[in-house]
Length: 574
Image (cartoon, rainbow, N blue to C red; front, top):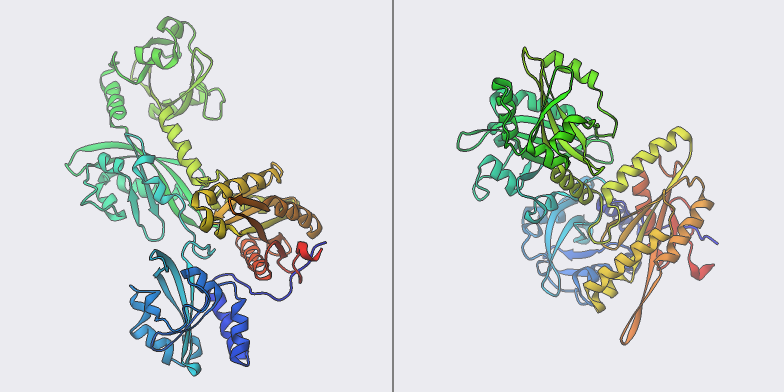
C-alpha cells in the first residue's frame, strides 16, 4: 500500500526555505510553537541576536557543526564562522535594523564554517531578519548541496590534474559566460609559458593566436558550440619566445539543463611536425623515407606506388603486400571511404584532412589522422597518416570521467541530465511518460562516524550496485553526490507503475551493516516526480523530485513521497 504525503516543507533552494520560514515565523503564535516547528525543519537553522550570540539552534544545525543537544545556545556566531567578515559590519546591521520587508532576506554567499572538531566546512549561508524580535535567522547549507539554478562543473578539477594528462596532450576548459580559461601543464609546454607566472585568460589566449587565424578561430568556436557533437579547431599559435606552431584542438561542449552552453573543454595537440611535412610534400614532392608518420604515394588513378617503412609498421604488413592489395580506408562510422567524392574535393582545393580507420593485416582497424595532397601537374596523391590511437584512448578516458562517478562507477549528474532531456524529447513525440526518483540514505552518517569513511565508501558502492540490479537496461541510476542517488525510469506513465518500481528500489537500498559490538541500519527516503503530471522539462522534474525527497525525510526513515500526493508510503503503515 502506498501512503501519500501530507503538508511538508518544500525545499527547492535556500531562498525558498527562507521565504517559507519567514511566513511561518510571522504567523506562529508562541515561542514554543515556533521552536516546535523549527525542530522538524529539514535544514539547519540558527537564531542569533544583534550582538552575535546564538539563541537557538535546531538539531540539524547542531549535527552540521558537530555539537550535542543544546550546546550551541549562548555561543557567539563567530565561533562557527570565524573568518567571515559578513558576520559583522554593515551587512549585519542591515539585517537587524532594516524594516523594509523586501530587504530583510539576503545571501551571505560562500562562507567558511568551523566544525567542533576543527575541520573547515564550505557553506552557502542565507539570512533573514526579524527586526521586531531583534533576531536574525541563518540557514547554512553545505556548498556541494545541489541547486539546479547553479550548474556545476564536475570535470574541471579532474581534467587539469597532472596524473590525468599524458605527455604531449594538453587539456583546457573555457567558461562561456565569464570567459575564464584554465589549462594543464601540457598546454603550458605547448605555448612555452611558465605555469608559475602565466595565468591563462581568454584575452591572453587570443594574444597567442596568429593574427591571420584569430577571426577564423572565434567564428568556428561559436559555430561548434551550437552543436552537442565534438569539433576540431586547426590553427597557428605564437609561443612566448616568438616561435610559430600549428596545433589541433578537439572541443566538447557542455550544456546546462536549460540547454545553454555552460563551458567548452577539450584537448590540444602540437601538430607542427605534421604540418611542416605536408608543406614539404606540396613544395618538393619529397617523401621522407624515415618519417615516423605513414606515407603513401598513389598515381592519378589511385593505385599505390610507394609506402614508407612507418606505414608497414602501422599496418603490420609488408610493402609488397600493401602495394599489391592496398587496404580500403574506412570512415569513423566504419563505412568505406568514398574515393569519388574525395577526388571532387581534391579537384577544388587539392588538399583534404580527416579522421579515418586503416585496416591492419591482423584484421584490426588503426585510427589515423589522414592528410591527402594532390601534387600539382603530376596528378599524384600523397597520403600522410598519423596514428591517433593514444589520443582517442585519452579522449575516451576524459569522456568516462565526464559522465561517470569515480567512486561508484555509476552515471553522474551530467549523464543523467542529458539522458533525461533526451527521453523527455522522445516522450513528447510518442506521448509516453517517465519518472524521476531522488534517493537519500538514512543512517549513512552513522556508518561513516562509527566505521570510518572507507566503510562508508564501500557502502555507497554496494548500494549503487544493488540499485542497478533492481533496474532494467533502459533505466538510469546516477550518484547525485554525497549519500544521494537519482534514478530515471523511462516508460513509466502512471503513479501505480511508478509506485511498484520505486518500492523495489527502496527494498534494494535497505542494508544491515554489522560490526563488532553492534549493527547499523541503512534505509532510503525517496522523492518521486512523474512526467508529464509533475513537469514536462528536466529542471522542473528534478526540482519536484528533490522537493518530494526532502518531504520524505521530514516524515522519517524508509519513506516514499510522490510530488503531488498527500501521504507518504511507509513500511510502518502498510
